[in-house]
Image 1 (cartoon, helix red, strand yellow):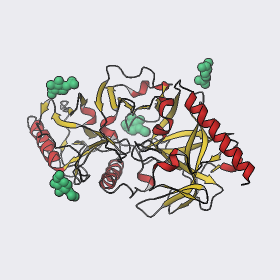
Image 2 (cartoon, rainbow, N blue to C red; image 1 turned 60 degrees about the horizontal axis):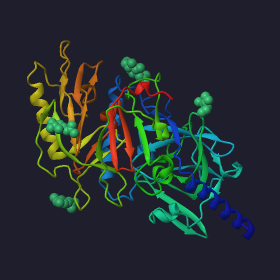
Image 3 (spheres, rainbow, N blue to C red; image 1 turned 135 degrees about the horizontal axis):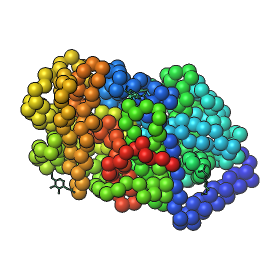
Image 4 (cartoon, helix red, strand yellow; image 1 turned 90 degrees about the vertical axis):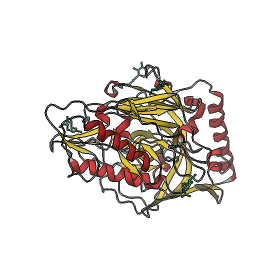
Length: 438
Ligand SMILES: *[C@@H]1O[C@H](CO)[C@@H](O)[C@H](O)[C@H]1NC(C)=O
Ligand SMILES: *[C@@H]1O[C@H](CO)[C@@H](O)[C@H](O)[C@H]1NC(C)=O
Ligand SMILES: *[C@@H]1O[C@H](CO)[C@@H](O)[C@H](O)[C@H]1NC(C)=O
Ligand SMILES: *[C@@H]1O[C@H](CO)[C@@H](O)[C@H](O)[C@H]1NC(C)=O
């Protein structure tokens, strides 16, 4: 790049930054969420309510994610474990669609990017930075580039990054800025992202549409943190039933597009300590069908050495609960069910507590998380998984051997969540996500 070009690049950045700073009015975006249990998903793994195999796969994914959450932050999960939901967005000018895994547990948003040194095969064309009028490389002194030294570094005056995943795959590229477009009126905004031109060891199907990850964690490079005041530091989702079928759609919304969604919202603080990237909540107790179990204070607290704590995560399907508390909760469910004439079923490899279904049994129990300042009661449908075909049901909880509690998507179905980082709170209320229309 010549001196003149470098000068103009710098000027353009300055202008973009000024526009972002001076536009005090917040804006909104919306993206369509596609669960991997939808036939529309390029990762389609089958129908949850029909296939034990699908549940098994989601359980295995949840376990691996739980393991990775207990490790140091810089050991990253294989990308195929980055989420169970995908979002579709448009990038560049002229724009092209890309499908990214929605990950509330990681920060960097990246997509495969031409000119490639190594790109894995994907079905839609790979985004080409050379043909986009709005593509820019990120200067080394940009706040995003200076944010996370374990991710970004400056090399030959270019801001580069590399992420290594636990399965040996890796993505490397140039930290860049580009126009991202969203539904429905394709509002576009300039976003820092990873132009990943060197992707190794990925084993997606050759016709996969996945081209990267959308990072929504609390980290400084996350989409939420970058957009900051522009979206009032807020995003929201309402997760459709994972076995809903392709007839309905729900959305990931930012800023103004959240509108007045959510009636009678409850609110609990997000208690993530500085330097950690997950959404930690302050969980004090749990009830099974309205009966409070009375866990001692601190049972679900994050410890100094990084063990413990309660995380809400959209990329995990099945909730896992710190081991000792898990035993108590399973005991409480067993004692509840013992009041009915039900027969235990032991032929299940994923869940500990299962019963044969009888035609008359309807009294599935609820479960409540007692958070600081808020109670989150799940209706019984999401406390259990019912295998209609095989004729039994199970309590959908896993023990977490790493002493963390991770609230997964199965427990989040049909609930409106608003992550409000301005106020540092998570808000929620029951909602029928099928009504989450544009
Ligand atoms: C885009 O926005 C305009 C004005 O806000 C509205 O009239 C129009 O219907 C919108 N288009 C779509 C596709 O939503
Ligand atoms: C899964 O199966 C249920 C029950 O058979 C059905 O209602 C639903 O539409 C199916 N979902 C998908 C994604 O096909
Ligand atoms: C972390 O600290 C807790 C007590 O605060 C202790 O019980 C636990 O063994 C420690 N774990 C590790 C891995 O150091
Ligand atoms: C949560 O439920 C408990 C009863 O288990 C109740 O005492 C408390 O007031 C409730 N808190 C809120 C914020 O509704």
